[in-house]
Figure 1 (cartoon, helix red, strand yellow):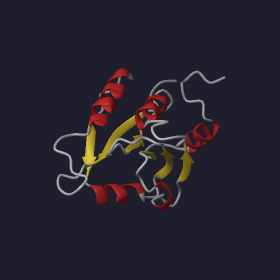
Figure 2: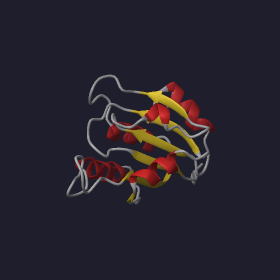
Figure 3: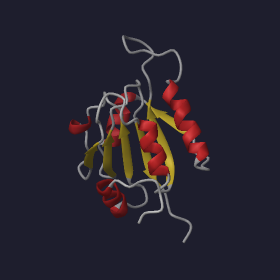
Length: 149
């Protein structure tokens, strides 16, 4: 019986094999998850129906199970048809979830094409594809070191 909130067997198995510096992508419903996997990454699709499940729900479950040392968002576009004038609302949700988990981790945006490059590395072990409809909700987590027994 697991004591944390993450109960998905395949995700637990992948995370159990992952170590320090491994990267986990929580992908929104618009992210090209099947074509941007790193060479060692596995894809788990949790996109049941539009909006179910959300990236923030996945983040909460992951934070209950693994140590995180870095959180990178995909920087939003400031011009063009998908432009935003300020941080996407989902980023405020992430900040609340991270704070609620007792962590002092800042969200660090990465330019869109550099974000894709960061995901394509050999450290990328898992993409969790959601059906989150919010724009620029992609979140790349770097696993930290477990400090307690």
